[in-house]
Amino acid sequence: MLSCRALRSTLLLKVSLLVCVAAIAIHLGGLPLIDTDEGRNAEVAREMAETNDYVVPRLNTVPYLDKPIVYFAAQAALMEVLGPTELAARLPAYFFTLATAALIFWFARRRIGEEEAWVAAIAYLAMPLTMAFARVVIFDSTLAFFIAVAIVAFHEAIELRDRRWTALAWAAIGFGVLTKGPVAIAVPLLVALPYAIWRKAAPMLWSVAGLMIFAAVVTPWVWAISRVVPDFLYYVLVTETVARLTSEEMMRSGPPWYFLPYFVAGAAPWTVAVVANWRDWSRRDGRSVFLLLWVLVPLVFFSLSESKRAQYILPVMPAVALLVALSWQTFRPRAAAVAMALFGAVLLVGPSLPQFSRIKPAALVEPARSASRGYGLVFLAGGAVALASRDRRTAFLSLALPVVAMPAIGGPFLYALSERRSQRSFVAELAPHLSAQTEVIGVEMFTGSLAFYLQRPIILVTADASELTSNYIVRRYQRFSGQPGVPVKPLPWFAQSLERCCDPRIYLVRDDDPHHQDHLESRGARLLATGTHYFAYAYSGPQRRRSP
Image (cartoon, rainbow, N blue to C red; front, side, top):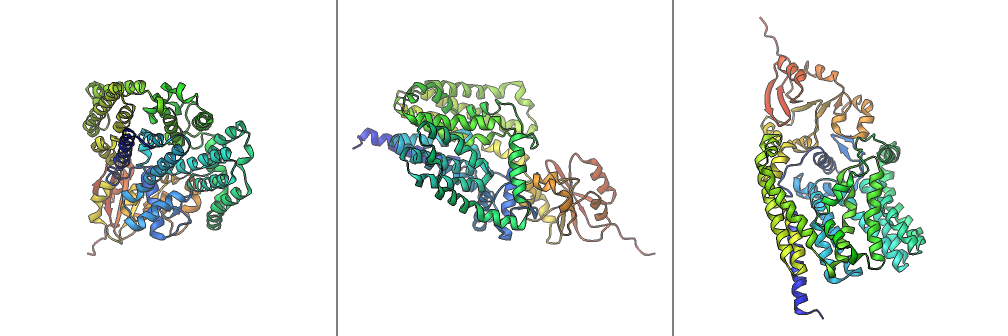
């Protein structure tokens, strides 16, 4: 039986977990979708929901095969219910983040302890990297969930010598592949294999049933899309996987230590706490070995890859949270508290420095100053309370809650930043001038958020289709730009379109493109609206000469 004090402590942790869940959702549907990733991914899902085609993802009606189907389908299903809104677009990332926290809770309670389970779930949600990508229309929170399920299932298969867990692991890998490709195979196996060898249970990573389940998960969609797009498998296996990992072709390269600062800051303050408490969790049994492999192997794997982006290491965050739980009984928060307080002090002082006023654009200076001071205050207070507290639960929550408060405190700054990188306001200016018959033509410009808020295809006039930010479409530009009815046109089409009369058109050009601006104005086009990066011109064709 739990004592009254233990019950009160558990209740405090339960309430705090609910606070974390609610705090991460603040402004989830209020911020505009930003380009490039959010706008593009949301637009692919919007087109999927509109056409009810849950086989071929499309961007601006053109097949978009840079990512598989699961995340797009999750967004599209929600848009069928909630409409094409920011909330519907962001909810899958949020839900999968909560699902990962629930998995961590289950595993910690099973393998570490009851109270430790609540600690692990809170620690996971109270990480800057976890919180950030729970609120962004991107695939990595979904991928992190399936990778975590696979890794945990492999652990259980190894420890229990039960291949039913192996089958579950391969099912999760299958859904991970349908979320972001073969990386979902590599990471769980690279983590589990050395642990299985150490535990003399390497055969537990394979089973006929597991491979059959994997094939049953992956094959139907691969078969269906290959019937529509015959070169799909070549593109996925050669271009999107091999080239991404072994070359700089995707232009996302970085030094070998690229992920280190993202790991330290992205899992803060728990990275500091884990290092400070290493003597406690490192003395435990094979759990510490397993969790260290879960941290180190993906970090090394992605560091050796030529493609690097901060969110790639999101699958590492559950292991950090579980290491915090593993050291809970002797948890010492002093180092993490000092680090948080010092960081808070830096954020408080930062807005007073002259360099802060040089933030561009100038419209972001005041919101950034306000956010920095707000963050600084809560971090300084959280660190101070954790440092002064003699109760590890109070200290732990003093470290966690300031992190999850970031969306609420930084709301005005996040909104101002999102507005700068979204076309929602620009489309709102255009809306009164649009009818069902109005053609919207982007002259060497296209953004996903623009298409999402317009809720219609944009005729893209382009030299190479790079504006669509799709490696698949760029490599097939000649094919798509020559197809009738496809809204991707070669550059000469722009001059030809100006000769047509007299259908209403809106031309969109970049604000740093004076050549096309001058061309439109010389033909009598009227400036209709200005956005943060684009101009819109109204034009209906050449002026008709009056008969004498």
